[in-house]
Length: 177
Image 1 (tube, one colour):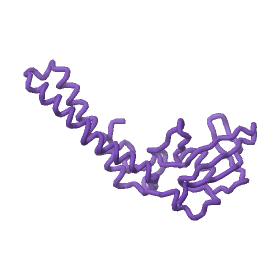
Image 2 (tube, helix red, strand yellow; image 1 turned 180 degrees about the vertical axis):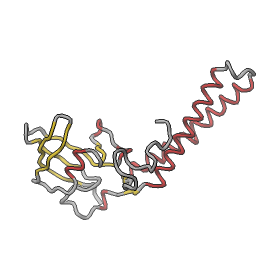
Image 3 (tube, one colour; image 1 turned 120 degrees about the vertical axis):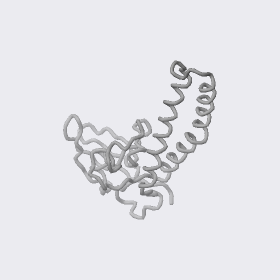
Image 4 (tube, helix red, strand yellow; image 1 turned 30 degrees about the vertical axis):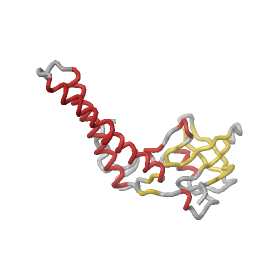
């Protein structure tokens, strides 16, 4: 990521400008920690290397200087991007969800594909929080969008690259509130 606001309005990819930018409290905390680590830990070290390298003289052929300057631009761009994200984020705490019988943002959902009874468990999270390895799926992903509003036993159609699949909601849970 280059840190620039590539989508103009900071809307999640593929959605119209002005779309809410939801995130869990944990996701927002991770972004704040990334900013802190970049700004307070990594950036001062790179500034030190750049200053040392600049003192050596000829900067045009100084790899430490060239790399350091490039890394500083990357850090500054990423910090700007993250700060913009955090300015616009709407933190939604799944633990505070009062309607626990339906799938909403932050829910952990187990569903079964009707074609083969294979089960999967996902947690519906913000765009920047999605991580398939952890089972965290963006709320704008096709499976999450299909499941939003569903209750246990509901069957929903999900568009996949292979076509349309039907899934049945097996269980819904939220963190303790």
